[in-house]
Each structure stands twice: as C-alpha cells, then as structure tokens.
Length: 179
Image 1 (tube, rainbow, N blue to C red):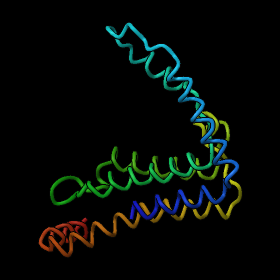
Image 2 (cartoon, rainbow, N blue to C red; image 1 turned 90 degrees about the vertical axis):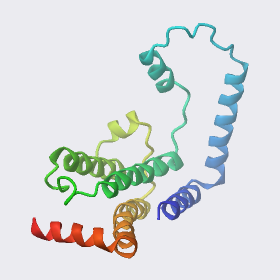
Image 3 (cartoon, rainbow, N blue to C red; image 1 turned 60 degrees about the horizontal axis):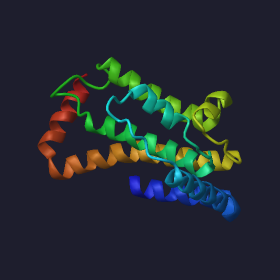
C-alpha cells in the first residue's frame, strides 16, 4: 500500500511539474553538489554542536518544488499510519482512545498533514518549504493517497491479523467491543 501510494504520488507530482520544472530542480541539485564538492572540508570536528548542525542543515540550499511537497505529505501520512497500526491496544495495553497522548498526537499529525495540503497557513507552508498545489483536483488526489495510506494500512494490518493470528484478532475484537 505504501509503495503504491508513493509511486502514484511521485507520478502525480512529476506529471504536474512537467519536464521543464523537473530539469530546473535537477540542475539546481547538480549545481549544489558541485559547490559542495569544491568547498573545503571542515577540519575541526572535535566538539560537535547539535544546534550548529541543525542550522547548517536548515540553511543549506534547497529548491522547494511540487515533488518534494507531495512526497513529504504522503511520507508523513505513512509514518503516522505505521505508528497507529503498530499500537495494538487492548487487551495488552490501553486502547487508542484511552491513551490520550497517543490519540492526540496522531490526531494532530493527521490534522497537520491536512492543513498543509489545504494550504491553510501559507506562511507556515513557506516556512517548511512546501509548494502550493496547482489546483483543487490535484489536492484531492494527494489527499486521497494520504487517506489510502492511513486507512489502507490499518485495514491491511487487521486483515493480516485475521488470517495469520485469529486468536489475537478475536481478543482485540472482544476488548474493542467491551469498551
């Protein structure tokens, strides 16, 4: 499911960008790599400063583009899906709705992905280098991939549990129905 969603996302973005924009991105990255290869290597690495490392990465040359934006949103939804699916809940631990920090973090993450996809805060999207989508049809296609990744992963996990671990699935189901 994740592989299909990512391949489809990349295909959507590259089709929407067109060959000219893709070439511009490739040329930009080629130019950056040449500049990095010609730059002298740092000699003092005894005392690494995490904050300096963060700012060097943050200020590194980067060309925001539609492909990066789409991949970021779909990849983030896939990470959220894996977190959500791997938390099995009852009868082994608190259920998802009872584990408030987990539930709120998953909910806020999904809401954040949706907010970024809808461009609710253009300033925030600009801050994290997300490009606006060309139109609402494209936005809906990306959001469909995000939802497919989230819900498809959950359903696939439960189907595999039914097939390969029916006793565990019955225990999960009886606990879910009891709450």
